[in-house]
Length: 379
Ligand code: P1T
View 1 (cartoon, helix red, strand yellow):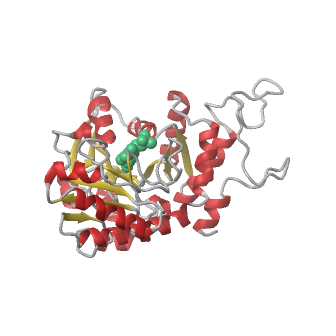
View 2: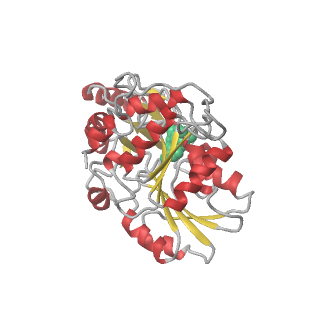
View 3: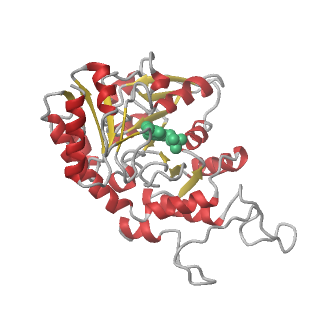
């Protein structure tokens, strides 16, 4: 089997047999000619299947070690399709720290359609087991989690879920398949916001579902076509283009993030740093065992509370104040008021003193100087 970087550049995108083009074509056609009714060359209509989208699907499936992969128009569309595997009355155990939009999707859409869910400590397999009900069908986690960077033991949770007859879904957005391969660790389904590290350049929104369970994969492909939340061909092309450099971007982002985390950990204005690469992080050992490196995301609380956090988030010059993450440019945000505003006041609410960083590929000294200046302004 080819190595990760080779797959990232080539999987699903051999040179075009008609022209030799080394880059996949952007097939804009919405429909495909049939030589007789039902006789076609594999494509009928672009919601059901599109050659550029299929290249992306083959590539990400290969990176995740999956037999089935379906691309969606956003991460939330991919999550929505995954939750539609369930029926009214079914129960989901969701990690108690997840992207605010994931909680909103469960609480404000799927719960209304009859799904039940219970948050449980994602870093404690016993807590997940304790939350299990006879009607539990699925455990849903992020690791590292957004925005607290908590680490779930994927293999341990997979064994709890399987013993009880459920599925484990891992949102692999923060880690990417370069750092962590949930399916190889026992997870049943991987979901992604490809908007983040896979796209890598803050210029495309997308999502993905990957699995080795044929029944699940076929149902997800059915939902992709039947509900229709598909990405356009240009978006698929941009995502494929981003993926080619995933490994090299990630190497730099991990190195920059670990230096940023070390600086913050020693800074007097910082109360706590959440980065699984720090030896004191409670998930450090599990992360070291299941991840290649510790990722490009760092969060921290400031001693001055919410006001200081807002001041820091507003005072950087190299880090741009913006939602999202995973691209080449560094971003800073205030989860309580931004990405996790939809969980404010709920049991999943995040500390208003928390600041989240997505560390990019810029020159490390510029990033450190920028943060030190903002921390001085915020204290
Ligand atoms: O934004 P979208 O492509 O729909 O993906 C949603 C999503 C899913 N999973 C995780 C772990 C995410 O972080 C996100 C989106 N998150 C942000 C926009 C953010 O700034 O945290």
